[in-house]
Amino acid sequence: MELYVLRNDELGGVCHCPTFENKDDAEYEAAFKCRRHSVIVIDESQMYEPCSPKKLTPDCMVCARCASTVEKRKAYVQSLGFDTIDAYLKARRND
Image (cartoon, rainbow, N blue to C red; front, side, top):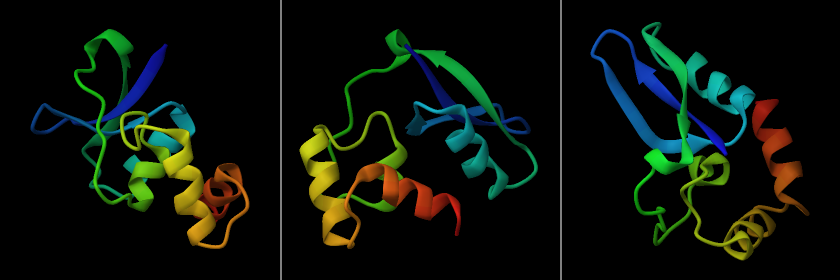
């Protein structure tokens, strides 16, 4: 499985959190960073331990590492008033 992460071309740093399953989501995130950010593809084998935060944030919802279970993600979006994770992500893209 391919995953997408942000890279700061000026500093050469790669940010593994958030990690995106969808290239469009990664490009959307990079668009709000400085002009030196780009999207690169990494292999799932390059990931270490999956992230399991104590408190979910909006970035966790698009991150392939965060939110160790889908149930946690569902509970989070329902607490925000959305029926599905996809509805939440669509609303976030339209912001």
